[in-house]
Length: 165
Image (cartoon, rainbow, N blue to C red; front, side, top):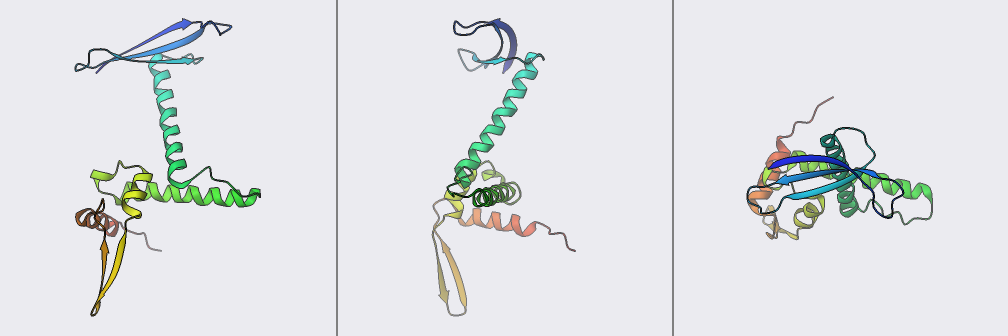
């Protein structure tokens, strides 16, 4: 897409002063109308830098939202501060372990799934342990976790090297 940035001053009727507005206009060849986004800011840098800054902020907010959905980061229902602190630390550790698993252990075709999707599709998979003579078989439901996907995850995890000492 062709992207253009424009900065101008604007004062809404409810504002006491005019403010700087940065517009980002994206022209896509397959679309009739351009995509336009506006940011009201007090930053005094180039328009492209303003958009880049706010995009990074939005990305960070999306990660926070993903953490809230996946591991209940905001569920601090205890009456004592220390208990809530411990619960928050456990949630942060669970979130980081989930991201580590996603980055190192998942095949490319599913490494973009959210932590919530991973929980619902892979971890919360129904299964049954069956004993046959001398062997145990783990039978998993194949809704999302197919045999080939399970094998790919297992191969990636066993290929990770663990530093010794």
